[in-house]
Length: 172
Image 1 (cartoon, one colour):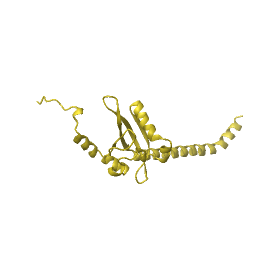
Image 2 (tube, one colour):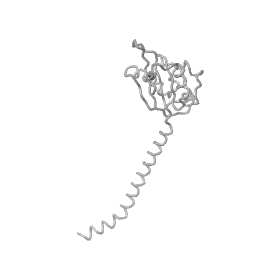
Image 3 (tube, one colour):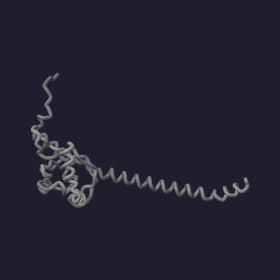
Image 4 (cartoon, rainbow, N blue to C red):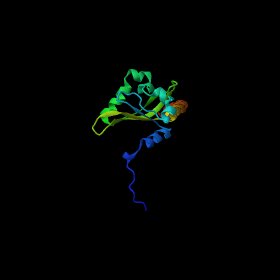
């Protein structure tokens, strides 16, 4: 039996962090500086968003937002919420390097030091476009079912109207 203490999370080395961010491919994980500029970029972010690390480092993270959200200052708002509330969570459309859209779930977390100084932000996001498409297809199928049932009910009622009218006259 080994009674050696287990390493604490704070003992995580730069190498372990590098291995984590390089090997997690289903999530985009990147750091932003205090101005919202991309400071790090993992292989998952490259796979999901299409930018290679050298071309995205130093760019505003607003680059992954839709033009309308940029006009509405959504990237800045996301950082403000994270800074003020401790996190900012969302599900929204984002834009890949090639201009295609993806529906992503993400969270931005501020990075504070022990003295309470903000050092930047961490952004973790996941591409859930396929789930969004499946939900839309299901909603559309449900709408078509409702329309069919309404037409069926209408079609069944209409032939019965003359019969009901005759019965009503006979019973008077």
